[in-house]
Amino acid sequence: MQKETSLPSSASPLLRPQVPQCIVHSYVNYLHTSNDTKAADQELIPSCIRGEIEEAINLRPMTTEDREEIQYEEEEKSAKNEENIRIAGPDGGWSWVVLLGAFVVMTLVSTVGPCFSLVFSKLLLALGSSSITVAWIFNIFSLVWNVVGPVVGPLTAEVGHRKVAMVGSLMMAAALIISSFAFSTWHLLLCFSVLGGLGAGLVVTTSVLIVPLYFTHRLGRANGVFMAGTSVGQFIAPHLITFLQDRYAFTGATLILGAIVLNTSVAAATFHPVSWHTGHLDCETGKPFPEKVFLRQSASSRQLNSNLASSNQVTSNRKSRKMNGLLLRVAQSTLRDLGILRSPRALIIAVSSTLVVNGYLNFIMMVPFMVQEAGHSPQSSAWCVSVSGVFNLLTRLAMSAFSECPCFNMHICYVVGIFTIAASSLAFSFLTNATWLMVVMGVWGCGVGAFMGLYNLVMIRYMGIHNLPPMFGAASLLNGLGFITLGPLLGWVRDLSESYAFSIWLLASTQFLCVLLWFFMPAAVARDERRALQDNNSAD
Figure 1 (cartoon, one colour):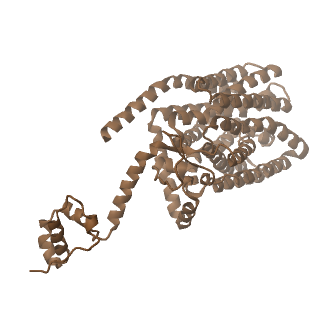
Figure 2 (spheres, one colour; figure 1 turned 90 degrees about the horizontal axis):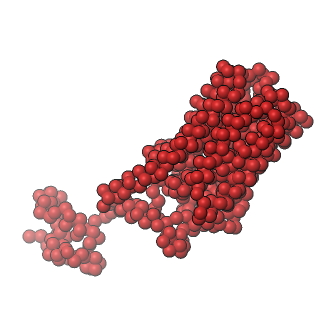
Figure 3 (spheres, helix red, strand yellow; figure 1 turned 90 degrees about the vertical axis):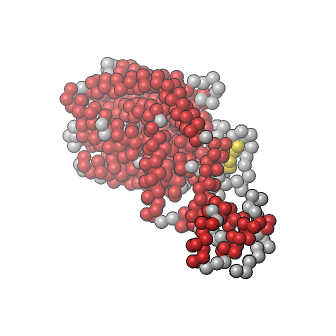
């Protein structure tokens, strides 16, 4: 008979009440027997009791499987608690610096697309480019810009907003500088459309994602100031570009424009990690959590809130990452984020965004050509674009400010904005008088301002702030696909009909279709709520 082994003194306090002392003594003796005896007696002690005893007396060393099981249980618990946690933006201090940086980015970069025809029209006309060639150059630029969107969320979660934005700024400026020496449409396609679209997509999307992280109670006003950057640039850029080209010709003007856009790298340097300036709030009490509280976040919100971990932990994690692992994680997160389109709400937002954004950008691209075709000067074209920019700015500021009012109906204003874009575009195709063209462009600018001023807020309203990166990325991807389908189709219609009016009618019809699509949003919300309720019931 083997000698009985006594329990360690530290084991007694850890014993669970449901484990009898005799069983514990027997199991301790069992642990000290030979392997052959263990194999013979293994079935005498059930595995559940064996696990209870080993955990109670702390004799079994923790294995990799044990650690994974504990981590899984912690993540499950954190996922349940995460619903009561939201981001508490500073709403002041460095938030205004970040907002200023994002405003500069939108002013300098996002106007390159709407002002494309003003920048390159003389070169394209000198090269004898057809309408479909011009449409391909512009729409491939927009395609690359938007296809980058789904990648930016996971990429900023890995390396930070500031690095991504600065790389994008440098690429955009380099694209304009290289394009100033363009000698063919292929040169312009590769330099401006591909390189410029990639840079613009990185810096603008990063700006869109970082502003909501810095503002909680003042998000509506901050979004209005941020989105106003496009309108300010749309007002200033046409006159600046016209002046530069009259003074320095195409090459000199485009070089100077590239140097101006290079200043966005300074603006991107203000995009600090949010953890340097923010904390967490309890949604139920509104009180801040202690800094020591750390919750593991689910995959969808981890991309949005990854920079909210402590700075030391983020620094140590980044040092240990490998480039191949980073690319794999970004790819996996991007594919996972696109699954948000399974929601009917997300699908309505993304499809309507695709049709409206493609419509109004292709429309503003054709405006200078239509105005000059009607017998007016390039200065009249610039004034049409500028007038739309002024009313666009005023409407964006108004919509963003009204969005914080309890009585404000975001759904109705968003749909009215889409309807105004479609109706004014249709009216523009029937006019030739310069004064009336400017009046209609002002109305069109109001529609674009209402749509774009509420664009991000609608996503947050219907999908939640934690789903903003995947929702914005999915919408950008569909926008990009629209640019390589709808854009070239418009150029083909223009060449076939030899009239811009038919292309405008096609754009207006797709935008009227979006108005009808938004009537199904209440049904989509109800369907998602029923699905969520069913999932909760099945989980319980």
